[in-house]
View (cartoon, rainbow, N blue to C red):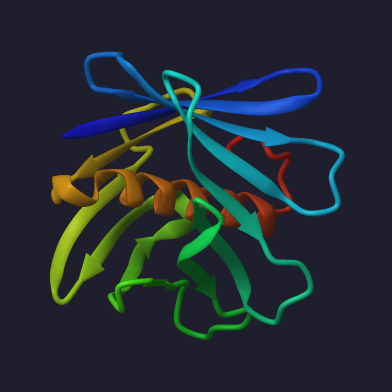
Length: 167
């Protein structure tokens, strides 16, 4: 299934909506500005917090924690220095290690596990800068894969030194 992430900028916080391909709003990704730590909340359409994304400060590896109900369920990281391209890795609570690779600078990348592609993230079909698609091929992990895609996108925005227009 295809999901779309669309950003909206507001005065005191940033917000993005994750929608289905049929424009049904599933999650709001909410980032509060003026905080010492970068924190995002994934909130469902009924207002319930599904997950939190917390960027760890002062680490050698760019690390983001994914929390549900106060417990860390995943960790995504990228080495600060890499000679042959950018690759991210995600370690999940259940022991799975996912690999995120592709042309991440152009926001064209895949999320892999054990040789299988679980999701493809692309800005290719969007002429506007504030939207991208996530094609999820493993539906049971859809929410987690969407969260991982948002984390990678945010990390890339941070590293490029751009305004945080894309969560």
